[in-house]
Image (cartoon, rainbow, N blue to C red; front, top):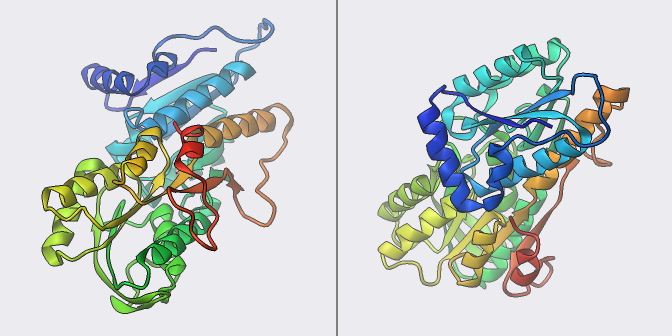
Length: 367
């Protein structure tokens, strides 16, 4: 099996710098840099081509996704191309990556669609050309843009995160900072996680399909609440730090910080610590990486919704292979319109009425 990692900008210097950064995260990055021999019995037929698009392998989450997709492809004798940098490069780059994959003969594309609906026309063209397109990590907006999504049930796990946050406050007023991926564009993961979290806190949702339309003050399940800010982080550590600084400028008494992912949470904690405000603040997030679980054990994070990127990509590769080989259509989880790849809420303390796992258990499942 041949694995190729392409930099969409065409700059070999930029790719080398990103790969070096990824190596510092995990020694297994070698899988992404070296050719792999085809597994299974020898065959004269050309291998099936697939492409994983929209990931940034300098992020441990997407590195895990790429590595597990690689392992699954290797077992099946699939020629998998990982298009790196898409997670940070923008919709125009991801669109180009999709077009390049189709032109190269990919029979299936696995897409992480965090750049939003601007890539939908390119996905449609790929499907019109007979390419199977599966979303991983985040659903597209709308979900029907792709053939199937292999993702976390974000609304449900976010609701647990909100319920746990409300219980953790013990009736105190909730002064909330909402640190999203984007406020300048709409992506489904932002909507599902925001609305699930606020609904889990018992805050009245005006429209579950719309972010930031809730009343800024009112009642949650434990008492009064105030939403101070909805800030964009681009799901990065620098973005989380800047967003938290902006929120603290608006109200220095924030005691609940919701973040779209761990990098944003790490940045938020840095800003709180620098301002002397870290003590007593409930910081909640999503990912469940090994670094995130360590941060939770240190008390820097309060609740962490652990998700499983390797499961998302490996299941998607297997589903795509089955469809290409014999026409088996990817099927959703029963009762859903996507395949739920699972999640677990991680907490150092038990929360009455909320199912959680301990940091030690999560450490055995992290990436």
